[in-house]
Each structure stands twice: as structure tokens, then as C-alpha cells.
Length: 158
Image 1 (spheres, helix red, strand yellow):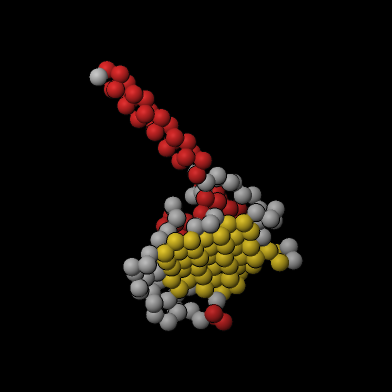
Image 2 (cartoon, rainbow, N blue to C red):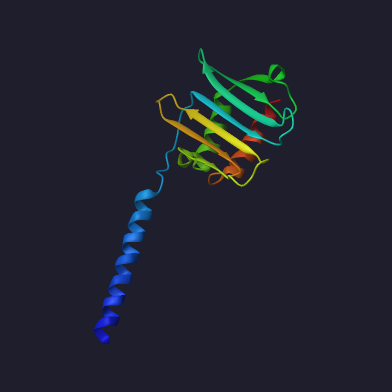
């Protein structure tokens, strides 16, 4: 009887170690980014016409140009703003603070929701690193914080 209990305890410990090892191997590596070449972030706010928000930053000819399209605004009426190095630092701080690097490869959707909201995120650095993520009624870790901070940043520009 004592031998059986010891065997069960050993098996449980082995199972816990294996499960912990698998979880450790599957965790996403957090990368701190220091440069930006291109960023695109958009999300829907409703299923109505012009029910979406999108932000784009592109490095072109040594200048960062942001295109800001808020809900209810036609694409041709989106605001274009030249960003400073300080502005880019703020954006990269948001990206790094909320570990957006762990979003890479996130592509999830809730098949049971027919009329919901979605998002898409794509970013490349000057070093060639990238993050790509999208979702429909499912979001990666820290999504709401990143969205709120980017909303605040971009809306302060216009």
C-alpha cells in the first residue's frame, strides 16, 4: 500500500514537471523594439458604414507620416501628420510596455458571434522584425490597453 502511494506521488510529480516544461517551451518570447519602419493598426467599432478606426505610420524619405482615420471619417478625409522622433518613442514605448511582440501569429476568431468587432495589427522595424496579428471577437493579451493608449496618442495629434 505504501509503495502504491509513493508511485502515485512520483507519477503526479512527473506529470507536473512535463506540463510545466511544455508550457515553458510554448511561451512567446518578449522582444523589445527600438525602431519602426511601418505600423498599421485598425479595429471595428460597429458594423455600420465607416464604423472603424485605423492608424498607419510609415517611414518615407526619412520622415514618419501618420495617417489617422477615426470612426465616421471617409478614407480620403483621413488626417496626415508628420511625427517627430519623440512621437515614435512614445509609440514604441506602448508597443514594448504591453509586450506586443507576443501578439505575433495571433489569428483567432469566435465562430459563434456573427455581428461583432475585429482588429488587425501589423508592424515592421527597420531591422526587419515584424509582428502580425488579427482577431474577430478575440484579442491577445493587453489588447485593450494598447488600443486605448494608441487611441489617446493618435487623437492627441489631431
